Image (cartoon, rainbow over the protein chains, first blue to last red):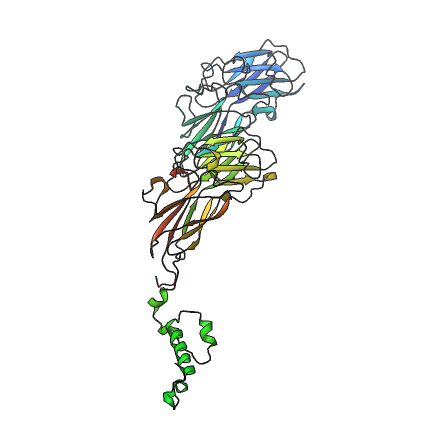
Length: 230
Length: 283
């Protein structure tokens, strides 16, 4: 069993993330573009965009300046915030892949990606963060994975985040996974007790909330996915 | 044959002096017991002969039973650390042939130590949930510091069944693996001395370790009811020799020796298959 990442072994992998970008900013409005996972229905699944005045961190404990539920069910699109009074301060917007959560979870705990505008600055792609699945290491009967670029102050465990694995080339909002695990660390997790076949293709996805130990977990809050061929 | 027979048959009283009779008898004895050390023969100034004329069947009567070269096969359990992060360790385990880790309650445990602290509860213990002889397990929800960690593989419930370990050394260096293994110390006609080694600090007697011997290729998970012998390890020492007596071991026969960690036969930790064929034979 190799300890190198699949990428370093030259194996084919596909990484999917939820993207959000501030495209223009004026004194009264913000234009936002988003691109979510294939199969997502942003309106049905309660996806929303949330705006704060802050440094480049999602301030989970602070009430936002504004929030908007995505009005359509297209997987990618744009959204405009108007009627704002924006000054030269810095602002951050987060994309939530589900509705607001109830205590003890973080209210906007479904935020998996963000875009930031520095004080008196212009939108820049380097200020965007997308929660990503990285360092996937398949064993024979287990798979471990890492998580990167999720909001620093998110509490994945407390919000009920979970991960799923399918023997498939893409994640699914409906198909039941081979295995599901609760995320207990912001840095990653692992699936145990699953046989990983030679040369077969698997997809791992992370959901920001909705874990259930006893029933099927909510499969609508998918934030990122990673497909690999063993 | 360069024996000077004239020495024995000199004229006068038929040539048979007491001294000459004794000398002749000694030569006959040497010829008969010719499988004895050749240096004795070499030191004899009178006798030089070729041993190829000696009957090989007679020779074999003086050979002890032995394990045929290259026929002994040892199967053991193994655990290895394949990767780690600051919060998790991934291990690859491999059990004995035909083991069913989930059914037999095999587990992986981890301690923050360089040797398994047998009296201390592990940081985490994960039951293996698959029935595959070998596999991988990721232990997560940990904080892996720069200290040493040791992981153990148990072949039944309870830490007394741990038969293999691996160390993540301080600073991330992987140390040599260790596991329970057995070997043949000595094989006689009616006895067998077995060498055993368990993990550092382990107490075989306290945990009820035992060995058993079966004829043929036996599997611990489907044992024949007629063991040739079963013997408990009557020592607290983690390594030593256990004697199996009153056996009747056949020539050129396959035997299976199995080391068990607990009373249940599914707690087998090492299997040694060997053959008693004579290494001096032409086989």
